[in-house]
Image (cartoon, rainbow over all chains, first blue to last red):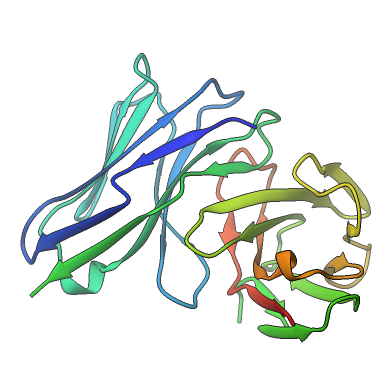
Length: 112
Length: 114
């Protein structure tokens, strides 16, 4: 199964700061890279996703940056808020392209 | 509720019993995926189904696990003769098209094997 490597494992950011989470992937059958946000006891919620015909996608305070040649993509959370405290997962398509391989997650804590 | 529904939310089984997990996809979605999440781990793909067909089961353990998505009714993930290592959160996701697009997750079923 393809690997998706995510870092850091945990992150502490002050309110108003920028949170940055990085992911690296191996070859994929299909270019689609989503980020999910998960709160304790809940299911993952789709946050933002990119199809790399562009190198960057922004939705509100969340931005995905994509580097196809390096096979890396990252999530930037601008003006981080305590309500953003959650676990974030990046994902990339499986070999078949039908499902997703997930990173191990980043636990983000935004302090007041 | 237009979201993905899973039940039960919590399931306790003793070793050797059977566990049945149910998933109703979002309205209009005909593609279902099952993932397993172990504590402090990411989600691991298990199986992808369309109505009455298993499309990709490359992540499914070869023994004791099976899945179906009948023409009528929810998708079911079945675990026979459960062992303690099966304790995990099991998530179902659905999509409108193939997996090459947005997948929406349910709240999960947390299975505990005593």
